[in-house]
Amino acid sequence: MRTVILGDVHLGSPLCRAEPLRALLEEIPFDRLVLNGDIFDDLNFRRLSAPHWAVLELVRRRAENGEVVWIRGNHDGPAEVLRHLLGVPVEPEYSFPYRGRTVYVTHGDQFDRFQASARRMRRLRDLRDLFHGFAIWFDVPRKAALQWLQRSNGVYARAVDQVKRRAFARARELGASYVVTGHTHRRETETRGGITYLNPSSWLTAYPAFILFDDCESEPRLVVLDARLRHQRRRRRRGGVPFTVAKG
Image (cartoon, rainbow, N blue to C red; front, side, top):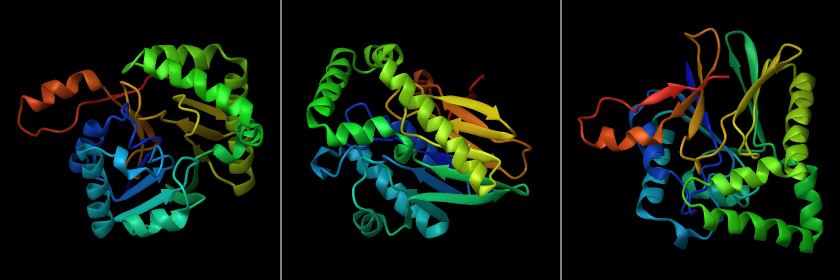
């Protein structure tokens, strides 16, 4: 059994790396696909370009021939809309077995108290969005400005730590050995108390990634697509998507 977990795609955003994602869905073999939240940037479908619609069509085809689970993220909208759109189950969280252990997957926004507070404090949310929006506009497509802003912001750092800490606690409560989140757009792996935490970051970066749980392998892998190589791929016959395994 091969399970691919990816999230924070943000279809509809001009920064979304839809072409590498389409190549992934077309070429890599897997039995189960877990879409871990924020697949849409919002539900304004007019923002979806042709490559974005192609990704959705591939997800539909995968759902006809295999298992696809959509975990709703804070950008995705109502579960009923998503279920009707693609005909796949939409869950708040999801667990599956892997080599005799349990994998717990959740988007992670429910662990982010800063975001919940910001929703209640309209002016604070607008200020946050203003800074993030400016950073995105200023440094498309690499987002170095946005990433610097996030990493230098104490509130963001605390939110990232809070999501991870509470995800560990929830996994421990469920008896899971692995927990996969998204939401924070920070790629990392960490093991605490026998539980391994994985976050592949987002598909807005130059190096999108996914998590692979393969029953033939003793441990999961965080697999990173080197976007700089995708132009080389177009110049040769289909021979697989160029992936490199993230270090650390």
